[in-house]
Length: 392
Image 1 (cartoon, rainbow, N blue to C red):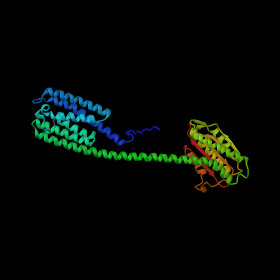
Image 2: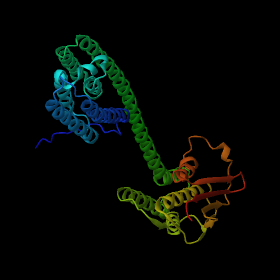
Image 3: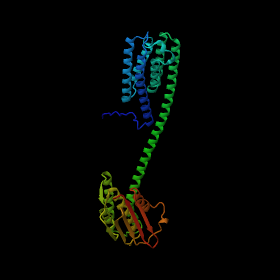
Image 4: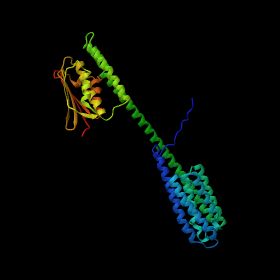
């Protein structure tokens, strides 16, 4: 049997919202910072060309660094700040630092304000925010060393020491800040992932409970209802009616299985569904008034099955009673009423473990956004009103 290797894809920004936001921010800001520094630095570099600045070296260097700044920004914004991009930035900046004696005039070198000093600071900060610390910190040290070497060669060791210390401080502060942010973001994403997992588990648990409730309702309304009727003595000895009812129960269960494997969608005839429910109770005399009515399949199933459960309760608990079934529209609401002239009961005294009213009728209607109202009293019969509003 061939072995299929499982592959996993990296988490998306939807799965890691904090990490995704961090990546976007710490890609966009360095890209814009590099672009701004490159364009402004080019103007400043060309503005002061007094000796020992060598124009034949300055102009190509400025052109390369400006082109690189534009390329860096475009690539970073499109594809992120990749390792080669960061490495190229560090290499060019270090080379510019070493070339300070030929690129920066002596009068603008002190005070850490030369265009190469700004370039070096931008590079070390960008490196800390876009690369792992194991690479970004050595990169900061390399830029600082390159700047110190170039400034010393240019005859200004004080500037070399001062800005090298500034670059080291910027490297350390930016690295620590980025590490703290990444750690906090990692915790936030971990908490979000845990929440998503718990939410999925809760949805699956609710779906499993609802499937179990549907199965229990279906069994209660068919096989268990028939067995209860037999247990209460409603059938004495061999009975053609019992055989018909058992056959109807089997057909109902088979239809339910077919419906779940290929669920019906779109509008269906509710009055036809109610007539089919009546055929499963041939022993119960029912006066039916069923106006033509078309509703979504899910609502039709809930209304018809709830009405069938109410009629089955009449057979079980009010033998000999007659029943009424009515389907009508009432100001945009679909109304199905089931009433009987049986002995009635007090709804407040129904034990909590009794399944019929609670799940087969009230619970089933609630699953489609409908409602069920039960009105009964000892000696006054029972009326059950089912309502569903979802039509124009």
